[in-house]
Image (cartoon, rainbow, N blue to C red):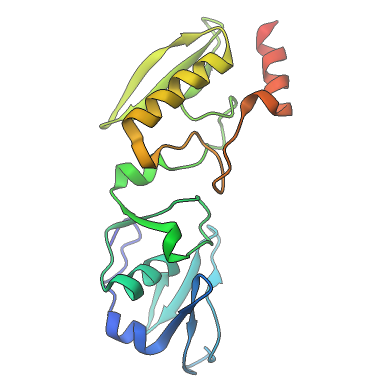
Length: 189
């Protein structure tokens, strides 16, 4: 049921009301305001939502249940796009696995998860969250070196859930971004 507290999904009712095509569910029947062919709406968090029988559900949870007959506690969007609910883009995950695949936080300035500028040491600090702990990987003069160290550790310990903060499946190379050049100028002086 996960952090959204969804009540259990009645799979037979789900399949009675909805069909699946082109990566999402659609209404098979007219019901209330919903008309045959209608699809999910997008909520303020960017997730697709469908409401039936008095309960609003995140569409990716319904897609999973529609295909597999049950719904795990957490479902991960492989490409981090909450609107991409194609069944092949979804995978069951633990809370920790789902967090490993998260994108960059809004306050991140390095462009890489787990790499931070340490003002007092004037170096890049690399850390990796694993097994509920933040593991220190070292401090580095060069952002590229810190990025490489944290990326290798993430591949080793996070496996298929490893993500350096890219959005929508795109791998981000900090050496070719304008943001990186600006940051390096700011920190190299």
